[in-house]
Image (cartoon, rainbow, N blue to C red; front, top):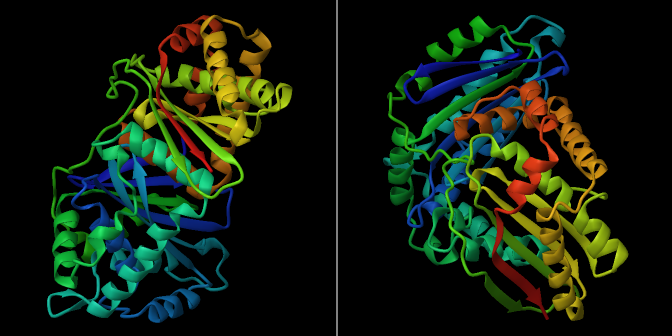
Length: 424
């Protein structure tokens, strides 16, 4: 297997993916901390401020100039919500040392810059630089205000917010506008120190790697040496942890100036057996995973009730979300047709061909994981956060072994939790 991991310090893990499929190496740092309403806006702001400058490179221009001198290395960072965790993500991509015109310790340089950005921020009078904080507060406010622009994504986020109301997963990953004005550079730096001391730290290296040399370079890096061991505070989410009870479905209708209605239905999977995620993946593919799915064929093609119709399986919360773009007048009929698909699958009204098509769809997407470095990193990080490690080959094997009977049994445990409809 081309993947290996090693604990650098307690709570700080190095993951290496050796691959010769690319001429580039990709390095990433993920900082995971539990989602909290009081901290979510602060955490979203921290990543944006960190990329503005470090003690060594005090401006974005200085960072960019350094990267340009490293054969056009590129840096990116962001914030993500995975299960009940808030994840700060930092990526740096560069040319593999094998392809350099002259020998150079480019890998070590890349790791050094990445660690500098994440762990050695620019400070002024014991806090973040106020000018950077104020600038990123404005940017964050614009990001939050613009979430309404993409109506399909907005409806999906609102369904999650309602389905997981008063729970961590219901929080918006970029935080809330009402929190922003009161954030000072001192308060933000105080939160950063708390986060860095408690978070789960995962370092990923993908490419043509000298594994032992990489371990040595990381362990000897001064920013890594500064980090304290920790019992990391993060949440393990998998198909076993997400126990649920059947509830009376909650319906929310919201009005906005739109021409196409957005219908999102949140489904709970009550089955929490070990490895039920593979059966759930196959179920979801049959329900709404592609052009052969029940939703696409019956809601969109046969009855012309939807412009778009599909579903996605959210393993970390053991949920499925059906998403449709529909004529607003078709709401009731579309909803009834969708419910009928759920009933039909639970009654076994799908063929072996449907089952095989679903498996092929999933296996095709799993085969594509190794074709993108960031996708492969995301796969292994998902395994890490869920505390359920499985190689890509074993994952495919589990999918292929799913039976029609298993899908039917799981389908009986799929219940509607929330119906969200965005209309005019």
